[in-house]
Image (cartoon, rainbow, N blue to C red; front, side):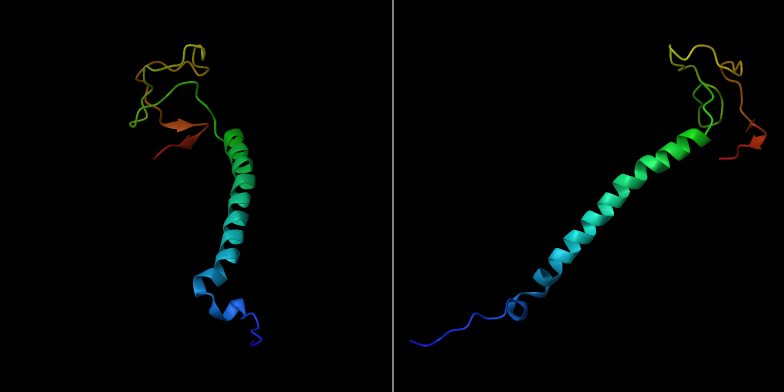
Length: 93
């Protein structure tokens, strides 16, 4: 019988198999970074953006769909009031 040595797996594997493991590990690291960063960014956004206590239409008019538990608007906004600025900051989009 002839002695047969096991062949090297790196030379006979297709190129996709060689890069599959690092690609999966990189994908998992990116996903982990997103799961860590998302709550931090959401908290920063939530504490920075003011909430009017009312919902607005696309034209920045206060609409009629106020939440029942929200109570009256803290700024005494009425339905169809047009919002031009918040805390002195002009709204354009």
